[in-house]
Amino acid sequence: MTQHRLTSNCLKILVLGAISSLMFHAGTPLSFASGNGIADTIDVGSPLANQKTSAIKVSAKTIKTISKTYTANVQYPVIAGLRSTQYQGELNYRISELARQDLEAVKKQAASGAAEAIDAGIDFIPYDITVKYEVMSDGSPGNSNYLSIKVLTYLFTGGAHGITRMDTYNIRNSDKPSLITLKDLFGADYKAVINKKVKEEIASNPDHYFQDAFTGITDDQTFYVKGGDAYIVFQNYEIAPYAAGLPEIKVPYAGDSSSGGGQLISLPVFINGVKLDLGQAPLFTNESGIVMAPLRPISAALGYKLNWKEASQQAKLFKGSQLITATVGKDSYISEKNALLSLETAPVIKNGTLYVPLAFYSELLQAKVAYTATAVMITA
Image 1 (cartoon, rainbow, N blue to C red):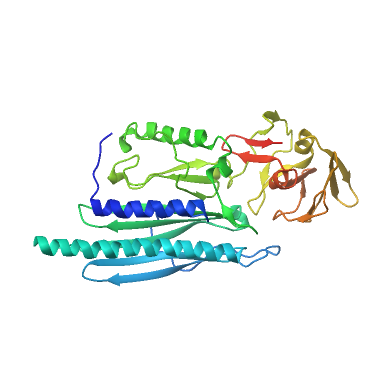
Image 2 (cartoon, one colour):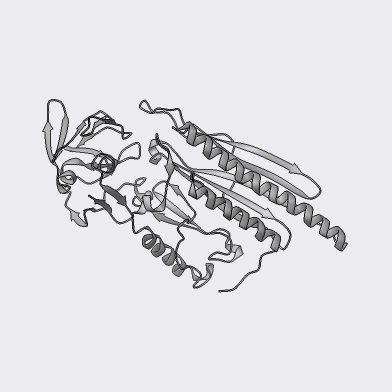
């Protein structure tokens, strides 16, 4: 692999950004990525009757500066409408703090660089920082309540060209918002699934990438989500020459999104490692983008007995002392302790089969649920 040298000033800023990103990954979800344009205020969702809050909105906070030593055109996202205002406040603070730190770093380095140029008797080219963002997934039920924002930070601190840093914010919008991880999307074997796809892309286009540069994704790999796909992001020079920009490799996590917006109909279901025969009752994605799974065959494979009451359109699951109730048309599930739980959608009957959200098995039956581009895996 050809080695490339960065200017010392540029490298300092990149290191600062990397440290900040690690801090964010350890706490509230953050990361950044590239956008093609500057975003204005965006209404990224429409409220549904059973939603607890209004639509998520992402607006731009703008900072512009033109001086003799540097220019700044910074537009970072400000999020409103998350179901937890506390989480939202912490997230917005951290986003703004990263932008402020990058801006301060450029300002200080520009002053130092200008002074060095004067001492050396050479012309000084002003430094530059430009930040843009783009909403990739709007956090609505139709997008699995996933909010994904990518941000592009361009830094010029002298030399032949500047360096671009990409980070992403991937948030699950729920009563307790949380970071979306690649493990959530692809299951325990997420690294093997993604590494295989990346290697296939590199092998298919060998002239576009450094040979033998890619050895596997990192634990804090940058990515964003859009539709039923995760886009794995690589920084300048990481696996490709500068001319390649910031490579993004698409990896489907919910079936091929080009064939129905993430339908899971063709995916097999494995219970504790054993393939389950679903017959004429395959999984499907409802109009809100939520994955629905047949209740009877999956619960039976997990050791539950089902009692169906036609008059009340209610199913009761029994296992030992456990009693769990699900009623058609009601997004109000009852656990063994009579606690009510909302899963963002109610049970439905489709082609004579009772379906519940896939999250039913993790939230009420306490099973581990993961799905990849090739299978849905449920483990008790």
